Image 1 (tube, one colour):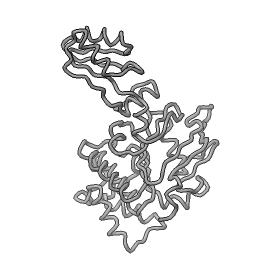
Image 2 (cartoon, rainbow, N blue to C red):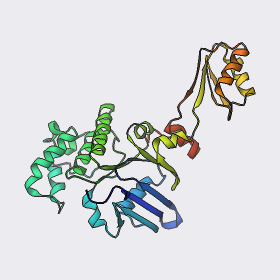
Image 3 (cartoon, rainbow, N blue to C red):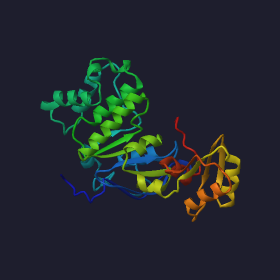
Image 4 (cartoon, helix red, strand yellow):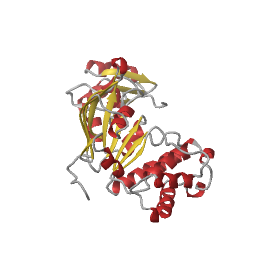
Length: 316
């Protein structure tokens, strides 16, 4: 089993990357990724996610601070650590003139720890696992972006890994492909593999991750379990009524803020420290016909917006 589960899969302290001209790409990052977690690394483009991943993989040297992967310091012990890590970073590097299967054979041949006697079986199993068995003989140049992404994931799965690092793993996939990759990530996690994935898709993180961290402008804003990140926020109060205008007045009097009316649906930030049953009673007493009264659960998206003060670019 290797290191005990108490050793974090990834741990950074004060990790900083400053590029020429003084630009801070990553600023004093203290990150802890528990072993066995599915950890979502969230942030808009330019927030420092990919630079962090490149430092963890020994591809970029930090300006200051420390990083440990599977209990070993990187970049110093990167050659010891990397055979236990599968990575898909910034899309896979593929040979277009080779078939999908031959690309994997080439990857595996370049791995000094890979057993050539089991290569054929492992390549077949990896292709099967990402749903590419039927297209294994086609040239990689004929693959769609989503198929290339799956082939890159297959390369990361050629050997059992203690840690899987995925940079935007569902990029370019159609909804069915995204479901398949999500299912695969869950399966890997249930086998005990720690999965660290960056994504700009909040619902993806919410569906498959146990833990998450939010980055913006090179700084870590929050980290913790997905449930805890969202739980720090109160949900929105949603009132359904044909008397939405009158209801808005009552709610504002009771201290509700950010009141928004669309047709017969009214949403608001609930008044702090006030019993919601009392608010409902006040609406009824004012003659408001209440058809629905519910507090919607705060989502990870709500938490992200609250932390960063900006919306999330779901397209990029």
